[in-house]
Image (spheres, rainbow, N blue to C red):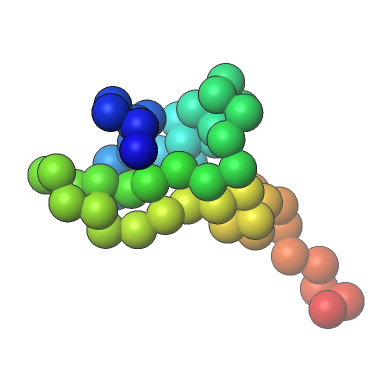
Length: 57
């Protein structure tokens, strides 16, 4: 286990989370609220959020 893992908070904006993932070359990053794991954000989650959905689909 990593003693001090890089995490994000639920209230962080998507650009901050994306920057952390790029800076640290992470494909997933834990979401922690007041010391409790509340989720995990993955690269696919980021892409779905940042890229517009095609109307053809």
